Length: 531
Ligand code: C2E
Ligand code: MG
Ligand code: MG
Image (cartoon, rainbow, N blue to C red; front, side, top):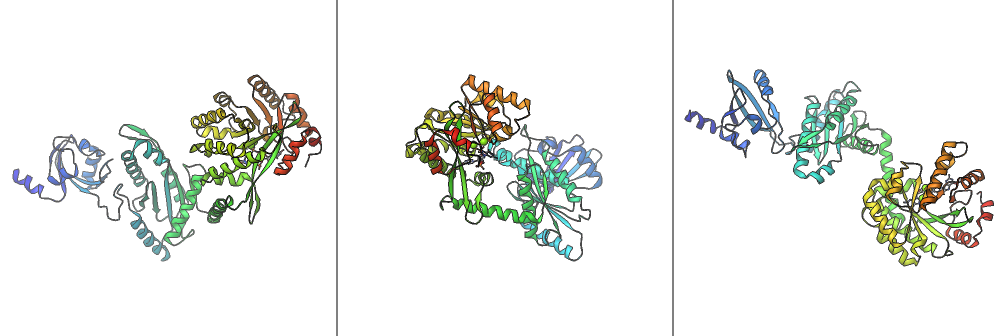
């Protein structure tokens, strides 16, 4: 036996002898190295090699199959069991070769993906079956990595890789090409619905919960799909097109899949161009502010103006803030632009009569890096505007995105003496808990709510209740988007404290706003201000 042991130790492959309970009776030197740091002899196989399953092993011993095991730590191992005698198995183990392979998951790497894609595309050119390329990106993987640590992140990637491999057919290729990015080549997709069915199975497989180190983790996946030959017959173009579809799947809310469409190419180019032009807009002086009057219904006087950002694009002319502000937010330009808006608005307001306030819209991203407080302080200091004349408008959606941080920042801003107003109320959740969470000075009722007011007794009752709530809590209630005299009369009757809208006045140039503020009597101005 000792001689046999020495002989087995000299083998390059790992070898284990197991009894029928799965206990390891013997391990050669190569097996001990592979299963480090545990000493395998005397342990159960499942303990020495987590993921190995005795019944699977017995089945494979009968058919002569190989089993691949991907442990949470360490390289993937391929095992081949054979029945030695009834109730005894000999199992050979080998580390899965990683050339052309990704060392972490054992999947193909970028180089192998390319080679396979080229070979398959050549086959298509010779009349072979079509194929589909699926680009996958895990949703919120970064959060797992950041909160649970890299070892857990790595373990999750291995488990995802394993599920992907089990979901595709044997002839399909699964590659990992970046942190949490995978690419699958689905070959022989004669049935046009094959890619669709695979994508659905992949989303389903990846989304099932994982348990890693006793911790339950769930993660999603987004998928973009391009088909060959119809979407491209060249590896780079195909992967790029699948990637564009992936970008769309992510933008449309993650956890889903999209097929490439030729317009996506043009849309992404247009979006990139818009981002570049937007980055140049501030240094090139293409922004200005328009000021829309707001009147108080008790005095019928101009209470102040809301500053609204305008961009004059060099080729396209005026672009509405609804189009460019979300882009500025996503590409990291909103802090700078927002700081400019604050300083330009405060400077304008400093030239108005002391009774007129200025309202500035602030976006949620301005709260993220703690930039809002210094920007407000700087704008007030440079203009000399008393803080009480500056009002910041924040939407309910912004409040929801990072409620604790936003509420903390709002409290600091309030401590400076700045007023805070809740914008677009009536469009989102319109939750009373938001009103309780932070004591707003003003609530602005959204235009869409105001426009449905006439003839809707439920809305009228809500409006009256809000007005009552506002007056008892000391919160001003201002209606936006007032366009008709009927709406104005109704809002007045329901107890609203202020109004804003085209009936009162369109957004004005700074000079026109200054003149209107000086004129003061707005009832007259309102009569002629239908334009
Ligand atoms: P908002 O803050 O609710 O601003 C009111 C919008 O309604 C403005 O559109 C205004 O021109 C429009 N409006 C006012 N009265 C009427 C009316 O009677 N009828 C109709 N149909 N519309 C009316 P605008 O200027 O296109 O701004 C759209 C949105 O863009 C704003 O909605 C605000 O959320 C955002 N925005 C504008 N400027 C800035 C800014 O400097 N920073 C940030 N973060 N957002 C801004
Ligand atoms: Mg606003
Ligand atoms: Mg609004």
